[in-house]
Length: 287
Image (cartoon, rainbow, N blue to C red):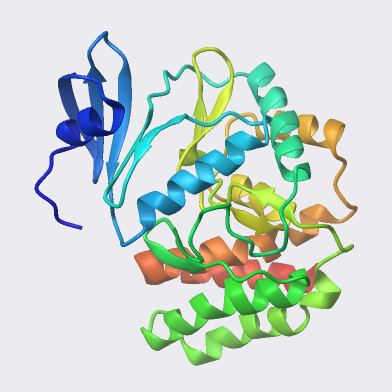
């Protein structure tokens, strides 16, 4: 992860433009100004292959021609350069449009559950956590085996979750065929759709950043919007339902679809997310 090149020199090399300024934002992310005044975002690698996985995800989402994402200006093994997004205040009108665009993105589909974006690695990431993309045709078994149980085991092995607590999550996995609702085709997911990755553009178009894109169940993206709050979420859901109505009982399945991101948070950030994870598992069983 450590390399001698600076974000500015990486941006100049990958875009072919001179750099006139740079401003660190957070972690491995830097805002860089190119000649002519254009701003780009430069992200240094946080793990082997992470920026290439992110670039492949952004391009796959863009290829759907639905929800907007920052254009990829350049990528190599260590650096990703994307267009900067000029943000503005969230609005109900933008939220409805976002809901429609998100529904169209999901409907553009994926080859299989767990399918990585074209050119994307099987060993990808969600945030800083490894996320393996192994294609499958059956969502309940794939979700249990590839999204829930691997992180549950890591949390138990680390002592973050107790063995006695893990049993409620294991019961959810055992009952997934019953709890999953009607079967649906694989959707093209952003994959890490919490509020921080939803940028409200100054032009009233939402842009999505930092995807962990893969083929999955569309309700998982929506459940992640619920997880930490999203401005105008009711309007987002209204726009979504207008375009692609959701199966009956979706509110009862929110906890089920939140198990994956919550367990990722338990693995990355510790015991503070344990009770919320267990609550989501109990809600899934009750649904």
